[in-house]
Image (cartoon, rainbow, N blue to C red; front, side, top):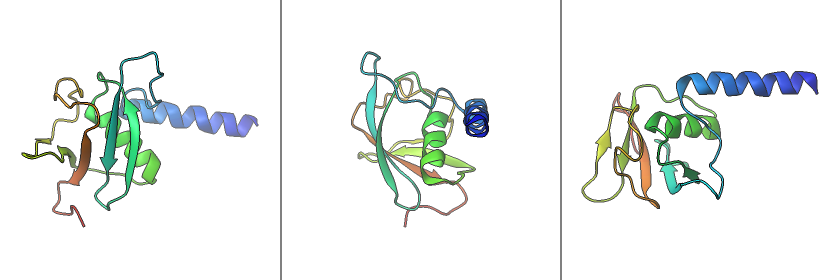
Length: 113
């Protein structure tokens, strides 16, 4: 058990250096339900805080998909699409409403299937 606990703590510390709190907000907190689609088409639905930055979304996607997205941006799927390259901005700053679908796009030309 001690080995497992140490691994979990280490993982959380590593994740927190790249992004904010990776834990899903509680029912009592302000939250947005978002769908996130990876460049490979994998998709997940999850609650995020309005104050979470875009890097947090990328970090959660990396964790769920067991991969790493370097040099990426986030784009909205509504028309017209909006692309965000500054991943330090919060969902609130980007005016992303609840129930949005966000896509992670790779900057090096690899993108949607």
